[in-house]
Amino acid sequence: MSKIERISSIAANPTTHRAVSVHLSYDPKSDRIAYASGKSVFLRSVSKPEETIQYTEHNFNTTVAKFSPSGFYIASGDESGNVRVWDTQSEDLILKGDYQIINGRINDICWDADSNRIIAVGDGKERYGHCFTYDSGNTVGEISGHSAPINAVSIKPNRPYRAVTVSDDAGLVFMQGPPFRFNQSIRGHHNNFVRDVRYSKNGEYIVSVGADRTAVLYEGKTGEFLKKFENVHDAGIFSVDWYDEKSFVTSSADSTVKLTSIEGKLLKTWSLEKKVDNHILGVVRTKDYVIALTLAGFLYYFDESSEKPVKIVYGHQKSITALAYSAKKGLLTGSYDGKVLNWDLAKKNADYVTGEPHTNLVVGIESVDGEFVTAGWDDTIKKLQRYRRCYYRW
Image 1 (cartoon, rainbow, N blue to C red):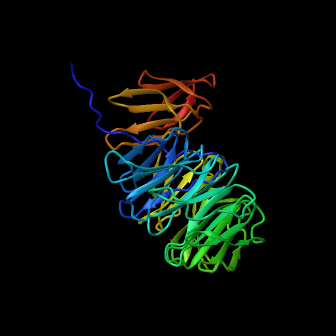
Image 2: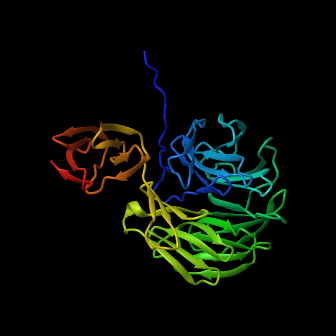
Image 3: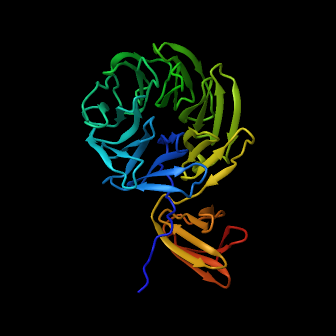
C-alpha cells in the first residue's frame, strides 16, 4: 500500500469582521507576516506567500499575533483572553508560556524592545489589559485609565520606555515604565472610537487613528499633543503603520491606503474598488511593500511605483466545503462563505472567481462539458467559464 505524503500546504487568509481592525505583524529578519485565522496563526513569507507555517494550539478563535523584535517568538491571543508565547525558530513551535490575560477578546499585543515584556489588551470584564514577562508571566505594570475596551497598544521601541493604549472611549492613555504605570489620559482630539496607535520606528512620535477619520500626532517621550490631521480619509480609519521615520500609512473603510507625512502632506494614495468587501481593515509596512488586508480577507501588495496593487494574495477564510480538480482546468475550491477560488497548483496561488458569487455555502463543484458548475445553499447553480473567471446563472 502506497504512503500518502504531504508535499505542501496552502495557508488560509486572515479572519476578518466588519468594522473591526486587524493588527498585522511583520518580522524584517525573516521577511514574514503573522496573522490570525480561525483557531490558527499563520507565519507567511512576504516574497513567497506559498511558504507558510501554521500554529494550531489555541482552543478558541485567534484574534492577533505579534512577532517579538528579536523575531524568535510570537505572542498570539484569542477570543477567550488567552495569550500563548511560542518559538518561531524550531519546527515544533515550542510553547514558552500560556497566560490568561483577560476574560474576553484580545484585541492587540505589543512587545518591548528587549523581547521580554508584553502588553496585551482587549475587551475584558475585570480589566482591559495586562503587562507581563513572556517567560514567567510575572506582572510588570498595570494597564488602567480607560472606561471601554482597549483596541490597540504600542510600546516605545527604545529607552526610556513608554507605552500608549487607545480605546472605544475616544481617549489615549500614556504610560511610563517599566513597570508600566498610568501617567496621563489624553482626550479631546478624537471624537469617536480610536482604533489604532503606533510608535514611530525611532520612538520620536506617536500616531493614533480612529473612526472619526482623524489622525493625531504626539511626542513620543512625553505624550505631548503635536498635531491633528482631520479628514485623512472619506470614511473611518482602521489601521496605521509607520512607513518611515517621517511618514505613516493608514487604511480605511473608503477602500484606500494613504501615505501621509508628519507635516500632514498627502504623499500617495493606493485605491481599490469602493465596495464593502474592500474595506481595508489592516495595513503593515514591510521591506518592499505596504500590505493591506480587506474585509474579504485578501492581501494586497502596494509599492510606490503604482496606485494599484502589484500583487494580490487570495485565499479562503472559512472552511473549504467543495472542490473539483482537472488536469487541464486546474483546481477549484468553494468555501462556507460562498467564495470560489481557482488554483494554480504549480505556483500555489489562486485567482478569485469574479462575477456574481454564491451568497452561502458552496456544496458542490463538478466539471460539465468542459466547464465547471457549482451549487450552493443559496438555491443556485452557477456555471463558470474558466477562461473568463466569471460566473453565469444556469
